[in-house]
Amino acid sequence: MSDLTLLNGDGGTASVALADAPAFTKPAASLTSRTAYAAAHVVPKPWAENVPGAPADIDWDATLAFRRHVWSWGLGVADAMDTAQRNMGLDARATRELITRSAAEARSVGGALVVGVNTDHVDDEVISLDAVIDAYTEQLQFTEDAGAGVVLMASRHLARVATSAADYERVYRAVLQAASTPVILHWLGVAFDPALAGYFGSPDPTVASETVLRIIGDNADRVSGIKLSLLDADAEIALRSRLPETAAMFTGDDFNYVRLIEGDESTRSDALLGAFAALAPSASAAIQALDAGDRARYRAVLAPTEALSRQVFAAPTFYYKTGVAFVSWLNGHQESFTMIGGLHAARSLPHLSEIVRLANGCGALEHPELAADRWHSLLRLNGLPA
Image (cartoon, rainbow, N blue to C red; front, side):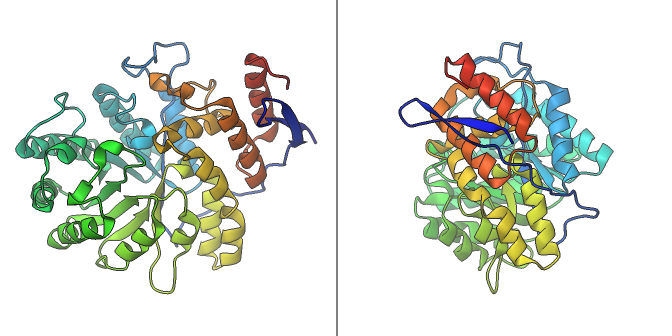
């Protein structure tokens, strides 16, 4: 068995044993006990001008191949979301092309797909509530025409202009009435995007939850669920216990997903997680265990991954995309550790070293020898022994 070189806190190195890849198998039929989407990232052309502020230049072959990888494990793909660098490098043109290409690819393989709908194609920072409605509706119609399911993302434009819970209710009512099929709402916390402070009318999640429940209750035939990304397990459990039967809770809590997905005596969460983009085989194996009624196996597979996810999503949390792309590179899903907007520079080598250690320990390295070789090459590139 090979050794894996890791960084010490003082900049030195130490070796640990490289673990074998876990013997997970792809599901023979659809996953049934939980609905799970992996929020997928995009892969850039490594030789292109993917520098801060430049339009995204995407390697479509590698990007779509990664989505096929996720689908092959029985998971759905949530595309054009935060993990795909919405508002952090993925411009409006690239977003539209990503939605169109992913929708066509999903149809060709029979994969489940939802995509983000936002207002981020509008360049003006401050617009009216009516303009927010128009912007949402424009993206909604484009997405529906492409044949993809909809996640109605939290809008920075709405957060800037709304002055009350009633403003949120007005906007969501108008946009939801324009939807031809039920959509998933998206509540993104400030750890992921500080510009969304006070979303749904209050910085207190208990108060804001009342607005969310009114929106869902008043538009029950247009809302199939809500993705909650507050990194607050208690707030998620409280809200999901009050949802109508027609609306599912999709956890977006990358810190506490193991117990939230497993659930309690009365409620449980489905999943729409950026972490699952880095953990598709583990997530699939865990849900297969739930399908078989084996909760102990579920916990044995998925619980060790949570420490890795917490490292990937460590503060500042909005740079978690770097860890997702890094694990993708380690696992051979892209040829270079690069990102649109130059975001691969957003995490330090010690941070990445801890990702390597935890991925090795929880079975997230799909091809351990390849991952070790790539990690060691990065260490040598930075003048460190490997």
